[in-house]
Length: 510
Image (tube, rainbow, N blue to C red; front, side, top):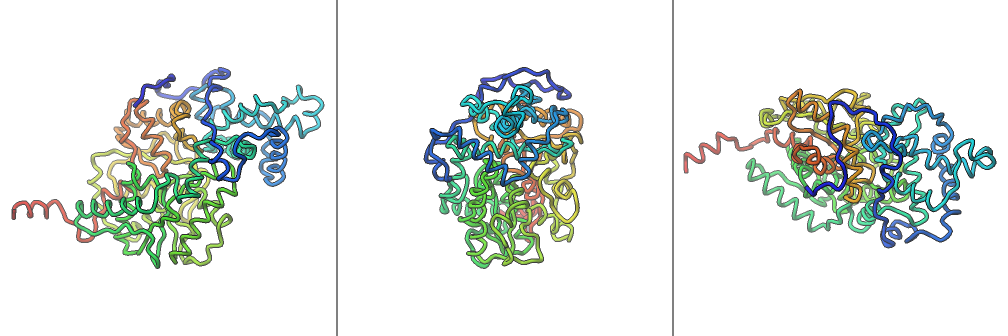
């Protein structure tokens, strides 16, 4: 880990609400997108000359199309309920990282040009002219929001800062002022089919390697198929699952579950990415283009079901938007959810008694679970309210003997963000990522100290990547974050699997 060039917060027993310190994060902005990244997404290559008028036109356009945005801009009464709910404010002290402070960056301009009081008495209502300084401030602070929506849980008017953040980023993109990290990734998806730009042969090579590894471990020929026409299930999973730990350990687990369930399944080079960064930049057109790859792959392969792997925002896009973006999916088997989460799939098999586990295989760990924001506050699993909280925990408890929840004020619907969501998972934003992880690190430290927790499981690729990076900043090990299906993989007993006893007998025979 490189030495931090900023002050890392010190962990205390509780996260206290800090006093305001203006401008502590004003210096931080992500790299600006290059022209070819912008144009690939349909945006101007660089900031246009007439950006002032176009920004106001775009704001009017978004208000007319999204009634929710208009309501959010008008409804805030400055009650203060959201002020101490953002992990970035709690860790940076910057008032513009309060949800209401961040909203007001856009709201002040809206009032200046679209309300009677703002036009004639701007000083009375906090209205503000749109200037280049304003635009730069938007770029900085709207890229210090992970769109986790925790503030919206506590807002009595239901104002969703994530929606305002998405709108601001869409406005910035529309005038050629986009973020490099998100736009470069979306361009890769349009070109290669996944966030990492992995070509088909590289994915195939990885999957063949996994088959060899699982066979060496278990003696069972578990297949990790790619582009198999006529398979029953299309698995759409984040591209991080193809190579990085702990993600790939989860992919190994998916394959073992499918194998033991006796279903045919396949991955797709066309849809080799579950993530959809179009949501992070507020561009429904780019979100739709990314989502259509999944429909195209499902039709080409002739599958009957679509299952999503462990990815938080991907599950939100799939659960909340897939049908309207890329549907209808009436060619799929109506007996199953469209789409279905891998945790739902595994949980159903557990309920039916179709999977056997040796829970002691995970006895070297005491687990806790991090609820990922987009799963917790924007989706569901199963047929009961709260399934998105209960099902992942039920899967963990089915494969592990030792499990403890973190402080209930930091999990479930109130879960704290990992600090790297919403398009912030880039090294040029490391300072806000590390500081933003403070509330989650505090809760984790407490269960480590009080309950002997050794590892934290998650079902989000971004959360896993973020924790791998930030855990060492807080004195913890990067391998303390694990995939839920990594735990499943450790414990599952495959039919015909060789046992330790078999290996002992083989050694004796030799």
